[in-house]
Length: 331
Image (cartoon, rainbow, N blue to C red; front, top):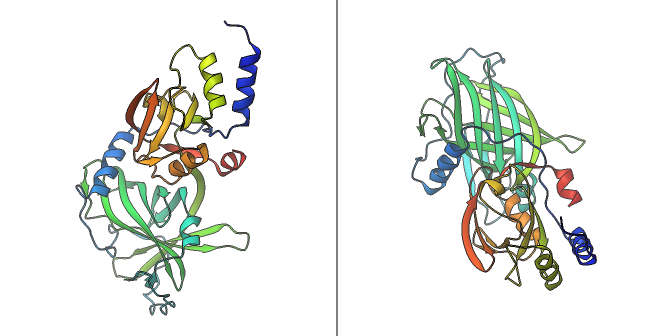
């Protein structure tokens, strides 16, 4: 092993002052991760799913909740000029939420709720006003666990914020599930600042079933790399220490370390690589790169352009869950 020289000590001091992005030890990806990525990609390209109405009915089940008759629609909220609007059978008139509210739910949420006597467990990935949700539940008709992918949109109503699902797709079958009703949630903020979720579905007699939701914020998507801003000083010291993968670029974001078992490692990103673009956006700082990753969909590939020893390379990485809010704040 080479001696620890003053030059190496200086390099490590520089790296210690740079903004890095760590990944926490969360559970690894699920066996159907690749299928999820393909389904989501097809979903957003319009090649897999067709638009369906958001007011279908759940599969017939014996409800455990007490049904309540459909009430008179809530009064329409005041609509500022220029905002989108729509109607919904559960929540009445809806308007586009303001930018502050759009940012409030960005990240990954874990949701658990019941439809009748069947528990649904979901992972919701929001980028602001829109997102995707993966839901698992036991289907009595097929006698097996099903995984449903939906697109989710955030709206504002007179009853509070709402999340509306659309385009339910059975990932096992790889096609739209006409028997599955889209999910609908109402969100309200408690006095302590946390959020309360409620799930709404239709009974067979068209009465509305309302059930509580256990909701937990998991954090933000991550790649599993540590990064530093590329400066002339960092470049010089890094090239002194490294015997291979020398830095040729003068601008970009330096990959200092790739964590074992991370999505970045699986995609062959290496220490010494210089990130140039993420999703076709030029990056010049670790904080900028992290914001792009944080605003991405869970499991949906992020396009990356990097430079390795003077050669430009294009690849994609599927982020996983999650860097926690506490870890992100420390960074």
